[in-house]
Image 1: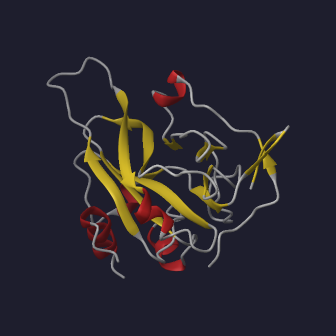
Image 2: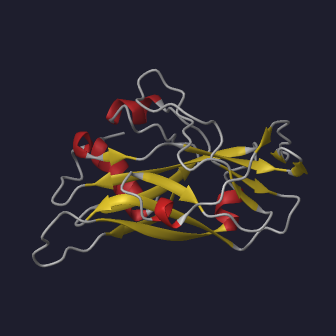
Length: 209
């Protein structure tokens, strides 16, 4: 797959089991206002009652020797034993004026073709879908560089179709202002978030999946 074709699929959205019970207890996390406007590039899944539970603000599931990211395996959990909302909200923080933000999801990670494009592109290609894209507007004459955040509301049905094996992955791709869509060496990438999908139960130590 040529680099340009991969980028075009992301930007146009033309890329085309049973619930898993994960026996591991994790404390739920509530993002703060500071998290939501932070300068670090990251993806944050917004909690929703007992149905969408945030597990890590900056979790990473790349697990790749060529990736510079290490961290938590699970970023969030979609609890099929609760009443899931019709949409899920993702916030991408730490983006600059003029950049294009592309949020995508897939059911696998560390695809050799994608890693060959850029070794920080750890999102896979199985079931690859575009969750949203946005351009961060420029001001006329900014006195200082301004970082911001952008949110995406995604239909839950699109996400659950990726999580039939019990998990899926989300990553943000940042194309710089004036950047060449055919030159992914200049792109930037968020951490890779692993979203678990399955039955959830509560314990005194947090949530069990």
